Length: 229
Image (tube, rainbow, N blue to C red; front, side, top):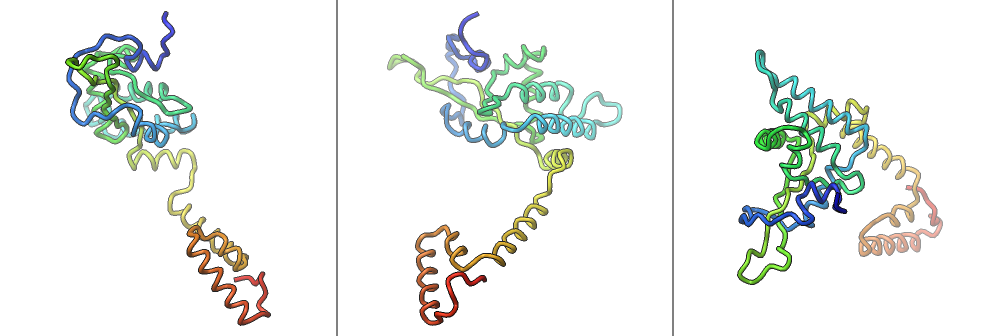
């Protein structure tokens, strides 16, 4: 076996012949937007990995009509989803296998995998960015850019995100917002004026407040510098 990494093989890199196919519309240069999206959507702990899979399975069960073999995602869709979550880079979230690579790993045809990816995207469990890259060493009269594997991200639809939250017993957004507001209120009740001014992010506003503070102190010397709000 060559020295190519699994991710390079999965992405179709490392000496693969050029396809000569034109670059598809809306393709982006590799190494750009997908990096932030990988960090945002593809980096989560193993406990969430299991919860996400259960949420997808529950969604599949709920959307399965009587007499039908599959629900909205389908058995192959769940299989592909499970494989993609396992393949994602744990430190970077990187996820860019070719469809052919996925098909080989899950033991289904390329067309079946492509259809499964489409269903996952339609229902909010998957998204991707089409990518391209410059052709290294291309002559002026040759193709300058070539298509490469898509960059996949693993968002969650709202219903599945709520399932995951309940499974992991995480507080809801409303509860977190209330807790943060109460924490800020408690902090304000025990903070000095100087401490509050010091936390203002805008330097200009912080300077104005400091001058106002100094003006108040000069008009009322007995107030002291450590007076609580």
